[in-house]
Length: 372
Image (tube, rainbow, N blue to C red; front, side):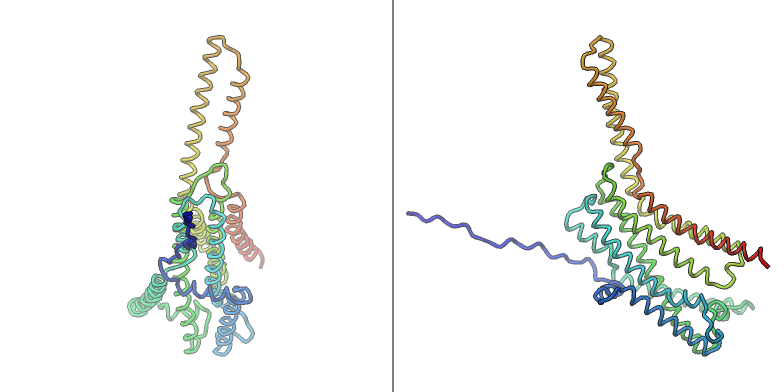
């Protein structure tokens, strides 16, 4: 009796391992290490800012930059600038990863493309980050030296001469050294944060423009990534508000306040809306297509109605009337669908973050001018 050949049992082939397109930056490696701590990483950022603030304050007390036990709000903003930007990048990466998962039903990408987009959305290329940070530091040092060597001979005070007043510090060697290290760190982190913002917003714009499946009746997933752009804009506003409100003489100059308000409004609007333009165009095109289909069917139904009336064939008119009413209802529904991918709460939160501090400043300035 011939033996039947048993089918071979081969283990299913494992999915190919994802190969990152580039190694992560130092900021991403730092975030990954802090995520492994038994406590929230934001406690680490807060502790770092507190240590820097205590160091700056003690140095100024010792060197006479501020009277003993006096706390300068500007020193608080200066000390927490670096950890706040690091924490903000960490938070935005977490948020972007979560919102991309929410966006999945609308993501028109292959599994490989989806993994690549997820990696790029929350990871910066190591070499680019290092080069940008170094370029920002060297560029600012070059400007300071040019100001010192070229502008100073014209009898105008240079930036180095004005630095004690600008940073509210003592004009001593130790004070200058600590302030210089802190300022260089601010330049480096600010360059990294600006690149992080541009990189992430550009990728969100790319996802919305190239990898989105527009579904007019299922807009929930499309709203997800707009929350990333909103929180990015709010984070930028908080940073600038803290700096401007703690700087000397800012409240006493309404013109500067108005100019800063216009600048902040522009930055917030561009940061929030620019990445969303692509999906707005997709939704507009999809809405126009669906309306055009509705129009063709409505025209066909109306033509059928006219033919029936002309020929006195009134049987089945009730069904035709229901069909026309349904098409009219569909058209009204399509007309009400928004084409910007955010819910009303997201936009209200951004407007509140923009306007509330400006209103508070205006009230404070008015009170200071009215009261003796």
